[in-house]
Length: 330
Image 1 (cartoon, rainbow, N blue to C red):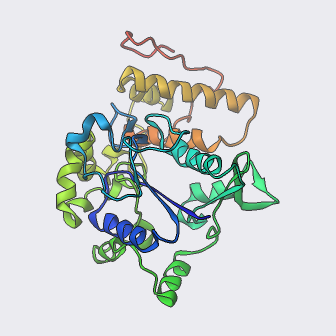
Image 2 (image 1 turned 45 degrees about the vertical axis):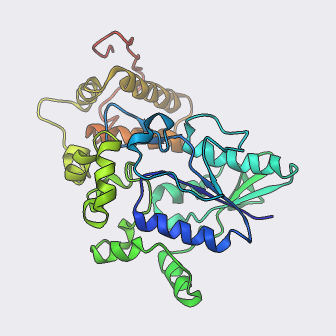
Image 3 (image 1 turned 135 degrees about the vertical axis):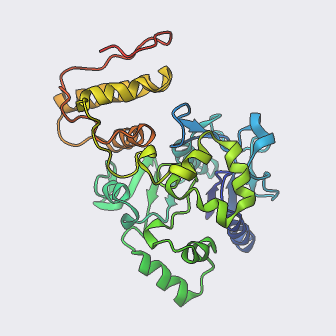
């Protein structure tokens, strides 16, 4: 049995939605189709006041970017069969738990979830393939998520040239957004189809205004900081590329200053990340795990911080402040 899972992030280009609809309509009689539109915690790199936004948030239906798709294979809160789903769970967990639920709902048989991820899409994905914790028979592109649930990326070593060559040779349908990206002058490395508010897409958020103005109007009212990021996404105001150390600051004092500009709850979150990193450095050494790196990079992107540990004494841990406190203690 083959199931096809699509995780819908609500905010996307109209041509992307059209491609998904074409694909599901074409294959719906040959596979088990699951178009998932459930509330989930999704990272946003646009605001210092929100770490996550929630696609298909049932409490904000009046400001959804798109209407809920109306097809028999669409899964939402009203018809959700996923017993492993938790309300507003993280997007990564939702995808993994779908594979677990699929195994359970199909007689607990061994299940493999196939992804189209490729190593040359980003250094983070390349690193992910090289550092699999739970590989399968030495294969870097297969990893275990749960008992009898595996994730595999058979296209992991494909280049973008391979992808477009296959499209040409086999006449595959594809997302026409790539045509619009090409006409807009984007490089292949800049052509990402993802949530517009995440770390990788915010730099090109302004393209929505040109390519899909109707969706752009909805985006501005959906997540804090969308309009600001569209204007300043490729400037130092959003931590784009290198940030220099201001005169009169050390990297430590600049770190403390930037942390102090954040709301207490968000600041405490990153203080805990610092503590984890400092402890890891002393007790284990070497590079940080992928999740910690992702969170620290995100701190740079929302505060403009370029170097997190230059001139910082690693043995001196940061202590989270109480919710009612207004300053960061050291």
